[in-house]
Image (cartoon, rainbow, N blue to C red; front, side):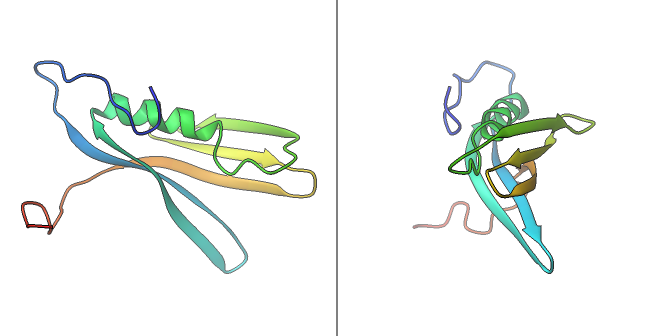
Length: 106
């Protein structure tokens, strides 16, 4: 399954909305980016997160990549060594708990 695909709904599971996000920066500048949107279970979101850790922000000449799972399994630290740079990225999942536009016409 791709980062934004989900498996079929099974009876008894709750279908929720999730994002996979990445946070990175340097000095006084830090950024948060939504990498993928997932409708499904927490396990679906975790699957999309793990897939994203292996491909996100790949430099043109990547030397190596290390992926560390944080306690709880909902976030990772990704360290990517390019030809010139070393980048540390925190990636995780977040569940939608409020949406003011839900039910509103587009």
